[in-house]
Image (spheres, rainbow, N blue to C red):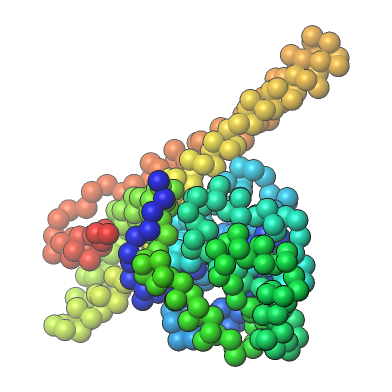
Length: 347
């Protein structure tokens, strides 16, 4: 069951979604005010998170593969959908769905259905349509295009709840930053001032926290050593200041790693690759049937071996990674502080 949760608005978490082509990447550049993606990029295979500011407000922007990207496998697409959720935990304040104002395609019109399937049936309430334009069009002309002349645009926007905004393809144009931020904040406020969540976002959050705990254990000895060195160099308030800064730095590094790689993601990858054992065997047998019963057996074995080796390799890698946990460290002054500062925060 999908639900909304209240959360701090200190940093806005924005999930940027694209149907096809470059609009979502142009939008990320426009939000951050820098060229995070080249102007020629039309798709990515790996989910990414970038941080920056929009009109003075701290934002975290998450991008994933386009909804209709045909260049990645189904297993890869599923894994990157999970990863994008891990990068945006505990949930996005808004989904920003980007389109080209002049190139609305039939796939774009069908995208809302896939949005509901991938993020949850209530996600469209948290969506805003962002329309990319080129040149020096005036606001009135842009509004007229939507309201009076282009029924396709009106229909598309209505499917996402009616909230929309325009942005320039030229990321150096910062004139619309304040208006965009205000519109996002108003939409969030109208939904109770919280963020979107669902069962899969909750799974993502649990997986990241579990991975953070595992990584902290691995680095216990390293952290203790660093703190011991600090004790030799600093005293009193300066010592605590240095430790706090070091703790925050290591915590941020661990969090970033846990978001990009955790048990939930590794399980998804293993399952996707492991199906090669079955699919490879079946396809090999079908191909071999041309040669008769003997060919079915031979090609079935070959196909199964190829697919199975991929799945087996992934599983071995997962077991190896899961088992790499450092032994418990002795409890001492540093360990007590580590437990204090690295304790998993309560929601």
